[in-house]
Length: 188
Image 1 (cartoon, rainbow, N blue to C red):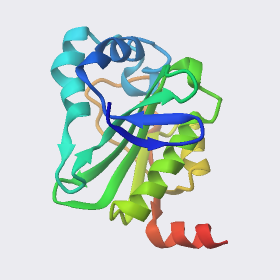
Image 2: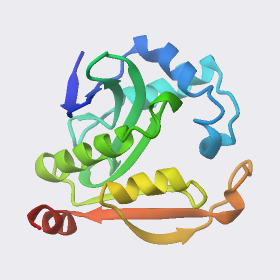
Image 3: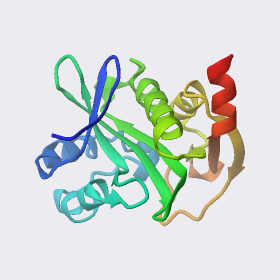
């Protein structure tokens, strides 16, 4: 098991093929998927054909993955995953931050803890210059995590959704944190 990062309470490790059942359970919780696909179930076949290959992909500019399985450090329980993925294969300058956690992990600060650790590693070790994150405007929990992790609101925008889901009519929001802003916050 390749461990990418440890925090006080989390281990972020590389995904393996053995994580399929964890992903099936995660992506079949309607509340977890509410702001992603409207809460519809995701088939095991889709997870094997689309989701898992995306999570197993190495990014050349990082020399490592862009998605990490999150486990509770004390118990080894699978909590979900974090995304810290470069937007361009040839440059680590801009990365997208994301997270998807089991409902049992909500409200315990895991999303903020993992996000802050990834941001620190990105700016300190990986050559990241800007972290960006997006979510539906109505996803107040995810927006709060972004803010607690140090990201600031940039803009609201709308996209064409292949299938509209509840709340999509309010659009999306983008947040960001730049390396100079992160440094200023570290020194204050």
